[in-house]
Each structure stands twice: as structure tokens, then as C-alpha cells.
Image (cartoon, rainbow, N blue to C red; front, side, top):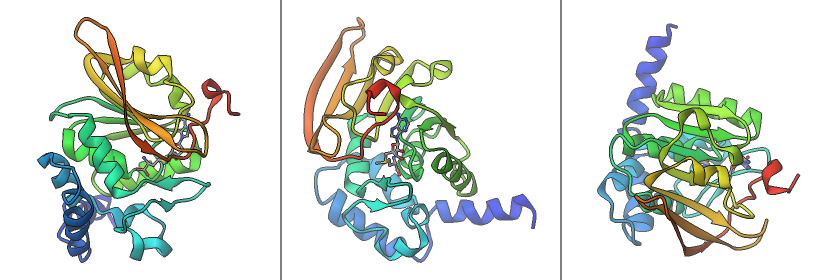
Length: 233
Ligand code: SAM
């Protein structure tokens, strides 16, 4: 079978219209728009990305539930609401260059790609997860997501500066390299706090004069950011 045929199938899956569409609609209505997510581009992305294809096959029936799910290697795909809420906090415009730290399944990266309609750079420290997510994203038609295996604490200097940075693992502190790689006028969203405890979702804005403003938002619970910079390995 040619790659073109495979891609054709995948693109139509990514564009919605599959048997799971009613579940996605319900997820958006009840868990996302039904709470406080109002950004139309984010809601549209959540309606389109086929979340059931980002979870292990045995967990498909639960893919649109209001909770995170285990993927593998002790990691998780975040709760749909948190994915939507964090994406909304980034205030993305089409064309925004975005960095994600913690690719995991690739689901959040696909949502970012739907909203920005341009390249998304995503870093994953667990090599098999990086490989699987990269292949999955390509098959589903999200070829504009560029996944690299590495320590996201260090960011991705070759593609910096970024309009937006999202960290999807709980950090002990905000990595200084990520602040350095945020564009003036850009926003970063990152859970900060202890490992395996409640963390605070921190919103960081780099103002046009380069000043950095931080504020705490929601209490959240994420798997820990690992890697050398966090002194957790
Ligand atoms: N965004 C993911 C998704 O949509 O499936 C969920 C991310 S999961 C909650 C956190 C991920 O961060 C894990 O896959 C973990 O391996 C990864 N991670 C932890 N520390 C990291 C680091 N220093 N650099 C890159 N990835 C890291």
C-alpha cells in the first residue's frame, strides 16, 4: 500500500467525521465549553482531534472521559479539559510558533497544530514515546508537528524564540532556558511544584520591554518533569 493511501485515510480521521464524533461533541459540550473554555479555535480543535487514536487500544472506550489516562512508561495523556484550558491560556493566533515540553502521546501537540496551523515543536524525554508520537502524528496528518527526543528543560534553541511555550509535566522551578526562548509579547504555561503533589499552573508573560510577569492560576497535578535541570534524576 502506498504512503499516499495511508495518509489519505489518516487525514480524514484527523478531520473528524468518524464514529467517535458524537463522543467528542459530548466531551466538548459537557467538560470543556460547559466549564470555562470559550476560545472558538480551541473548541474547534478539541472537536477535531481524534483523541481515541492517542490512547492505548485497550483504553479507547474511555478516551473521551473527564480524566487523564495512562499511556505507557508510567506517563499519562492529560484530562481533555486541562488540554483545552492550557491551550486557551496561551492565547494563540494562527501562525504562532509554539514549543511543547512533554510530547507524551502527541495529543496536546495535535491540538496546538489545529489552532496555530503552523509548525509545533515538541520535546519528549522518553525515547519510545517520542518515536511513537512522531509516527502517530504523521499518520494522522499532523506532519507540521516536529518531535524530538531530548530534555525539554533546555528548550529548542535552534527554533527559538517562541510565541508560546507549554510545559505538560510538573517542574520544580521554571527552567531559565525556556524563559530565554520566549518571544517578547509571548506566553508560557507551566505547572510548578513538587513531584507527585499538587502543583500550581503558572502563567508567564514576557512583556514587549522584556520584563517577565508571573502569576499562579489553577491547582493541578501532573507527572514530574525529569531531566538533569530539575535535579530529579
Ligand atoms: N502532552 C502529553 C499528551 O498530550 O499526551 C502529556 C504529557 S505527560 C502528562 C508528561 C510528559 O512529559 C511525559 O511523556 C514525560 O515523559 C515528559 N517529560 C518529563 N520530563 C521531561 C523533560 N525534561 N523533557 C521532555 N519531556 C519530559
